[in-house]
Length: 505
Image (cartoon, rainbow, N blue to C red):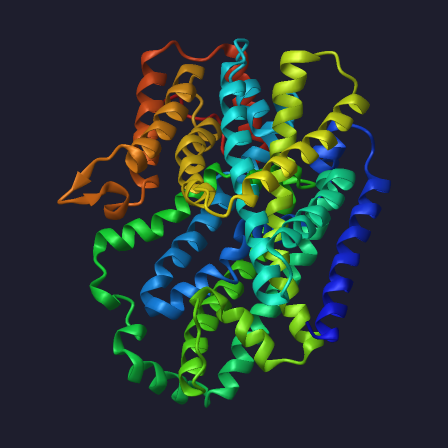
């Protein structure tokens, strides 16, 4: 590896660890401070933290690779995600910030579910905590695997060394600095991704003869590359691709940022920053794939794996110092997601399992210690799973977005906006959503010989059926207590003082 590249990566790792140390010194030994940063995140940190933890390596590897192979028709997923992220800020963020604090200071998503419905049986909290811990351990394994492969392919290190370096740095700043460290590092990593996804396509564009040269090159390769309906993509395929946006409402590592923002008044600013960041980076990622294809064709580059086009361009077009910075952008995307998932899984293990089942009277100092041990436990489990390169972890993780979206998405939206929703309705919706996704993927059902997941992305039936189950069961069961309804109305008045009395559904 070039010395300049090593220097850039060394600086990147030093900055991440430095932020972890700073956050450790600033974080009080209380649960809210460790797991939500004391609800003191500013709008910029909130926005870029949510964006960076969301996108992962998909932004710099998966999306450019899809555009490289399929052209503009691969962009429907990106459009759906952008719309979904905007809807998440509008529909979920303000009420979730107020509700989680009003409902006895809930600090995790399962904790919020329990307190929102005054669920003394604890079943909502336990079921949702188990879902989070299992899926986020797999998610984390996927991220660690991506880090190992990046170190192997781009830096020439052994795969196992890449696993430990990637996980080790993330664990260090997450374990000691908690939510504050995760959020600040995500902010820095989001800035790195933003700059990288502007630089790479612009420089590649200038080297490929500009707009006319790129357009002519792509049309010569295949005219359908510049067609949004290229390859005969139909309406169902477009809906299926855009439905990825539905997943945002149920992703714990994203919506927990809304719980931690300093004030509900900061959310519009966070929304503008977050959606602006996302729009620029998505366009940059798509452009990297298309322009990269034109560049590779013009200069005769053999691209064995389309998902490496960003890596190839960053090493060919830039000085090693800059190339190292651009490779750090990929690590930033991977590590920002790992850290968020580690912390959410740790929070559920601590607050929703340990405290609930074993030590209800545990002090904040004890819970913070358990939280740090939980970060280490989840990370070691993920590394163990990632060692088996032939395992089906990545396949499971690719479906986890749909699982979270269907199980938690309708539950989050309706719990924030429908006063008549009941505990039984919440449990029914969560179970129906999760089971529908699992049956859609693994049930062995087909349509004209095609697996159901190949016909329609599983989040669509899961989300729809979960919503129906929630509404029907809520209407068939006794309405919530006066206290629950009073809390709902108090939240409603706080979020929108001019709205008046909410409608009883």
